[in-house]
Image 1 (cartoon, rainbow, N blue to C red):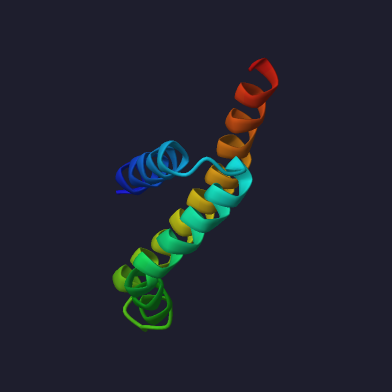
Image 2: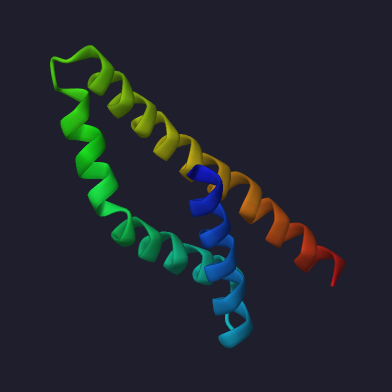
Length: 90
């Protein structure tokens, strides 16, 4: 699921960069904002599942939470690094 969401993020970012000829960091920030709004139900589910007393559901909630954190860290570090290196070469 995280790979699908990450693919969606990269696709949205590249599509917006192609459409708008502005600074790439602004486009990435705008795309992260859109992705955050789109994933709001997943955040609510993860928080609710974290506080349920059933152990299997609570562990699913914790896995969702760490997946969300890993997704944002990956997108923040590697996507910005990728765009920085392509701008430097061009």
